[in-house]
Amino acid sequence: QVQLVESGGGSVQAGGSLSLSCAASKPIFTLRRMGWYRQAPGKQREMVATITSGGNTDYADSVKGRFSISRDNAGRTVYLQMNSLTPTDTAVYYCNSQTFSGRASWGQGTQVTVSS
Image 1 (tube, one colour):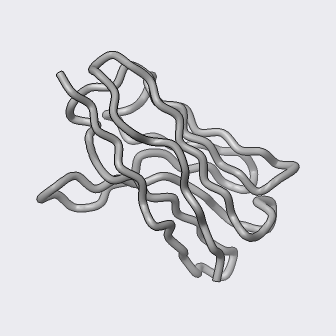
Image 2 (image 1 turned 30 degrees about the vertical axis):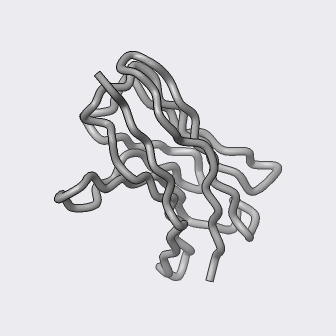
């Protein structure tokens, strides 16, 4: 089991930026994929951005061009830079990891609130 601890988030006005960090208990290069998901009230959890051990990234269409996922290969941290935020980005954001054996782990979540 991989422990994940998120930090960052908070409240911002529309058009602003926020940055999230996720610290993993294992080196990132040992994990198949890490990513960020979000869940808004009354909605299902959805993928926001992922990054594989090879460095390939994937983004939800709704955040392409605004969000950027990156990682610290020398360490155990994945980042999500969020720019041009809109109220529709308001949600609890969760860090996720997946091992090469397919086991998934989740962080506790961090709230992002964007006001208009």
